[in-house]
Image (cartoon, rainbow, N blue to C red; front, side, top):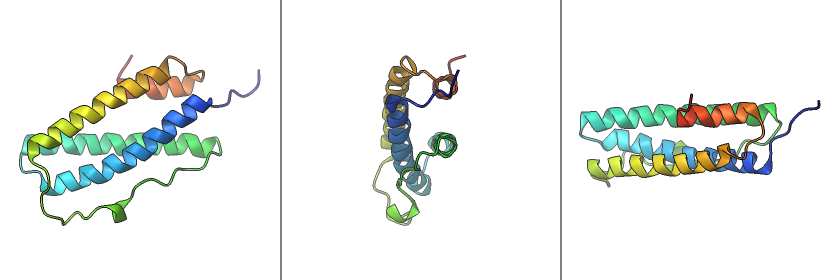
Length: 129
């Protein structure tokens, strides 16, 4: 049996997630600079670590498959020294909404993914054993 290539749905989902996570990473870095509540700060730090890990995994898959790495958002796209624009409760709402969107996107991609490694990648993000 030959190599199983990524489907357009798998590529599209991972591409979109990479771009979205690159944006989230910059937003979360800004939140870390301005958050006041220590418990919320811990959640933001955990979310930042998760987003960076996911993007590194996507980058690894794309490199292995010879797929160009998307040009996402980077440190030049955010001013970490800007004054506080968002209240801490908004930061929690942002985390909640982005996590919900991720669950929906990953769940719908999971059910149509052909490759075992991609299904495992999605399950890991959804925390499905």
